[in-house]
Image 1: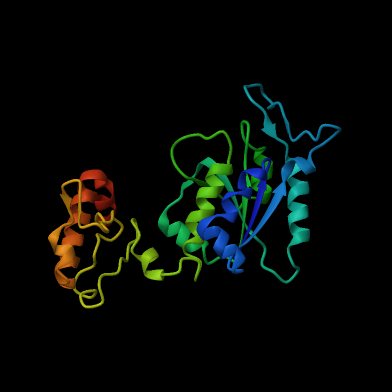
Image 2: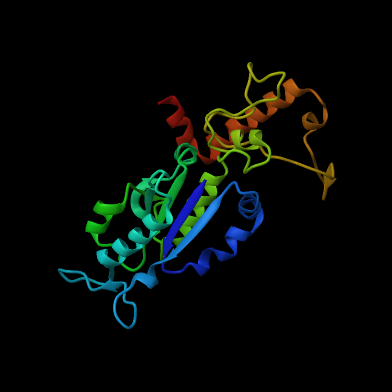
Length: 249
């Protein structure tokens, strides 16, 4: 899968894309990243990319002709036979990113992530080039780069073979179809579909007077699944009751 990132600050992505899961997936050829520095398409001696908004108001607006040049360059970098990239503008006005949407986006061979800055992007450029707007939450960031990194990471987890053990993705928090142990999968999943996961533990069995729940040491997969489901339900009800309401709907 290929990600093209259109940004004023390509250096923002250099380290994260080399680290951990994304770095390994990149080395294995599972993910491909392409950075387009928007400043290179700016105008005049100082490579201006923004101007004052018509009608007045605070801040500056990214100019549509700058983005036009950037998307023309993106088209040149895309093989003629390849599918046109699906363009996402990271914006607080977009639909909120969910696990379900991340899973859907992972099926697209090429995503282009457009990172805004200042007061945003000229609306005409959004209408011309953007397929959808996505927000990562109800707050405003200084730029679209952090949001693009969040979306990229969330989507990459669903690309086949990027996460070594696929069941760990299927059992993530917010997943609607969470797997249970093989013996009890049909009877009882280990978490509330679309809810929060149960707490997890590892060695040592005793730490600072706190013991690992005995059921997890029992070897009884059916009992462990029941315990995890009960913990998932309790946590979801206490911390995110809205998820239970969504499930009812």
